Image 1: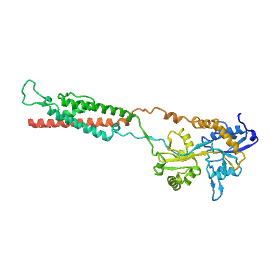
Image 2 (image 1 turned 90 degrees about the horizontal axis):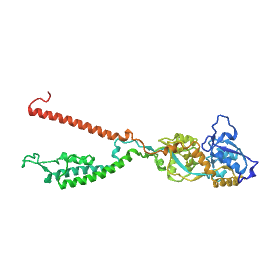
Image 3 (image 1 turned 60 degrees about the vertical axis):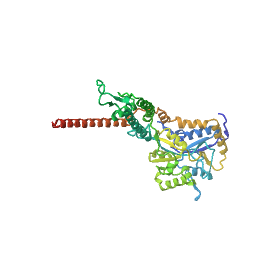
Image 4 (image 1 turned 45 degrees about the horizontal axis):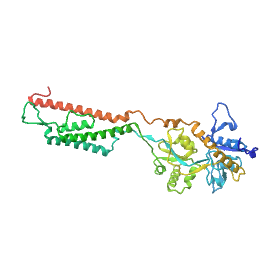
Length: 440
């Protein structure tokens, strides 16, 4: 092995882990009963193995629980893993243990083997429920109003110009050279019908004859060509691509209490909010102090509680791990701070420099990055990433097109009702004309 330092060959260190705490440490799933170091696996286990190969020492892995420890300056007492190290019952602690000023008062840390920051984990942004009239979305409300006004204006223009243009007046009886009256095709109804046919790209049996009406018709056809083309292009995107929306987008949304939120009861995350001077973080700390029910005993418990109404604050690296395996969760916003994970050891431990040097070599050789990629992106991962890479194009469902069916149904029903009303009116008129009963 390259760069082996045998000065620690006769040393055996007790190393504390937090089990289970994926991906840093967990029990090996096996049908056989495993004992000793072989029963543990994870990033922290691989890290201590690499260091042992570099420095030549032996080690005993031990579950130190999920209490990483804190230092109370008032009572001058420690707890958790830190207490085990100070009392000499353990030599090292390797897990997602954050280097903080308070902890460094009682223990030493190696150089960081991983850099991170506090971030928010919440549910994956959800797609909005499709509105009935999604087909109206390609144009804004203002554009629809202008289109309607343009439709009425052009229809009225046909009606007026048709009356002013001699070419639009026709002889209803071609056999009579000098009829007593002429007819004009551009009535109010026909003007509206001609404009509608052009707008819907269906045409009409009417043909403008005068230069003025043909000019208006040409301009209207060009206008509708551009409008319909723009509408069609945007409609495909609005019906098939659904932009997901998130309840919260940044830390400011948590400050505004749009959702409940919490963190691990004891740890560097809570310590960050307790000692921060930022008004936003002070307010968030007050919220968590007033609502202890939102605080958890472990990060895993907090992740499992995340839903639409609850967000959890934890280290960004742990969020990366969970979002690769829990497809309904995602990281929200940027990290709130910058810090690192380090290996905890006793104050003034004589082997600290050797461990730091070994860690630097692992970093320069890319070993630390390979280990992270293994436990974050390979072991048990890939489920969500493959799903998120699928094509965004989806089949059109009923909720996408429901508004169009509503328009079809309502329009057909109104036409049917109108036809029945006109029919009864016609019968009633004829009955009065011939002075007979309209009921028989």
